[in-house]
Amino acid sequence: MQSAVMQIIYKGICHWFLKLIVGVQFTDCRFLRKEKQFIILANHNSHLDTLSLLSSLPGNLLWKVKPVAAEDYFGRTRFQASMSNYFINTLLIRRKGEKDSEHDPIRKMLEAIDAGYSLILFPEGTRGKPEQMGKIKSGIARILSLRPELKYVPVFMTGMGRSLPKGELLLLPYKASIHYGTPALIKSTDTQEILNQVTEDFEEMKEKYQVIIEEDEE
Image 1 (spheres, rainbow, N blue to C red):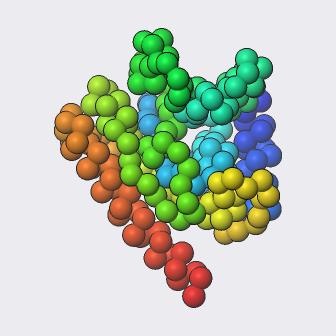
Image 2 (image 1 turned 135 degrees about the horizontal axis):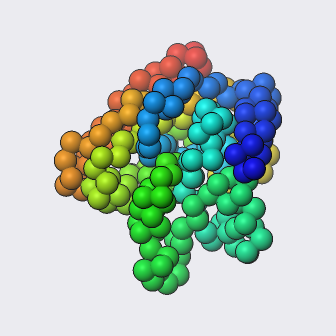
C-alpha cells in the first residue's frame, strides 16, 4: 500500500508540479534499477531537495529508498514522525540531545542498509546557502568503510536554493536541475581517503554544472 501511495504522490503529482510549475529539470536515472542497493549523496540547499530526489526516482524503487532526516525537525511529535515515515519513507535520526546506542545515527543507517534499504543522505549535514556546498562530514565515510560493497551515487543539484532558500516559505519558480553521477565503490576503507574520494566527485560535478549555470545566466 505504501508503495502505491508514494508512486501516486511523487510520480503522479510532485514530479509534474516540480517540472511544470517550479521548473525542475530531471535527468534520467533509470540506471538505478540495475543497482541492488545504493546510497544517494546529494548537496543540500533547500527543503525542495528531498522532494525533488524522490520525484526523480523510478517509481518501483521509491519504497526501497529512505531519505535520512532530522528527528528534531521531521519527527517532533509521534504523529509527525508517523506521517514522515509513511509518506516520505524517512529514516529519522537524532541530531541533538543524548544519543545512546539505540539512537546512534550511524547504527540506525547501518540497520536500514542491512534490512535492504537504499538511502538518500546529505553529507553536509544541513542546508547551505544557494549554489554553495559546505564541507562533507565524516559520517558517510564511516558508513561506507563499514559497508565497502555498497555503491554511492553522487548527485549535484542546482537552483533549489533559489526556488526555496533556507528560512523562506515562499516557493519561487526557478530553473533547477538534478544531475546524477556514476555509481561508485570506495577505493579504500580509510575514512579520510573515502572523504577525499567523495569530495573530489562533488568538486568535479560542481565545476561541470556551475559552468552550465553561468552560461545560462549570460
